[in-house]
Image 1 (cartoon, rainbow, N blue to C red):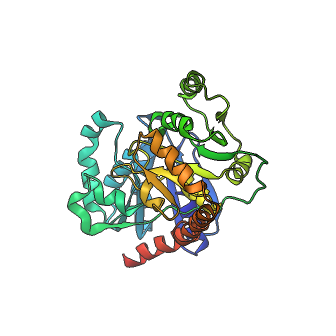
Image 2: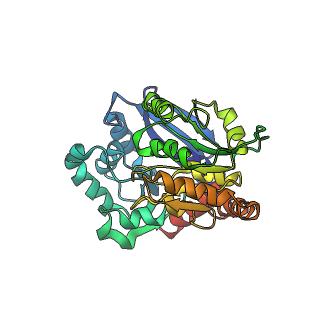
Image 3: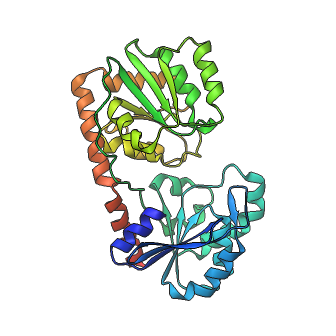
Length: 340
């Protein structure tokens, strides 16, 4: 949302981002863009509860030609519902509600209202919105807007006599890290797996590494400062996204790796856009989720032959430049608005 607001403002479009925060404030992002933070009372079920958002939008909604609402965010949907707004609505469908299934039963009517009132529904990939069970009746409204990022800054790789497989993210169940750790057993001895990030599964993964005798082959780095992340990408040979659930809807880390010219091994999660982001046989390889041997085989297949590996690297960088730059995201977003 911040990247879109900043980019649209830089293109001369007056653009405000409305969100809830513990600290109410207005942040001037650029000449044409602001972040308006209204007071949140508390957070529940991953949602900021903010009556102030309702009051603000109701008072100011007539100032906007387009309201671009991001889903899932029940508070934002409720604010729109109660605002009386009658302009154009873009619904940005980042993910189905997967975890909060009980609460979804109470929210589903509001969700259906937002889906029906939206003029356009935008996915981060064509796959996700086409296969979402909640959007089957509105396929004519669907389009997609791939997430775009600035390239990861260039950095000097750390010297190593090993081939390095990198993964980066929170140590949580849907990331499938236990399968990546297990995959190290099937990699040749000159390969190393490096996982960067913090999370509740850190101790469990550390115990798995010890139990399987992989201390020399797998390292958990913990949280890495932002300024050191380019060095990690520069030092790896392959990036691996081992996620196993549809909670992983896109995988921004994949396009960060591609911007560095690093091939990706990812998974074919049913209904997710992950395997669309990583084009199989071009920017990398996609394998079945929860399959350690397939992860290892794909990693070796990409890196075993120098010419093959070089081609994957070039293709990964080209796919990033073609689809996933920040500029491309802003340009396509403006196209979507202009069509309305």
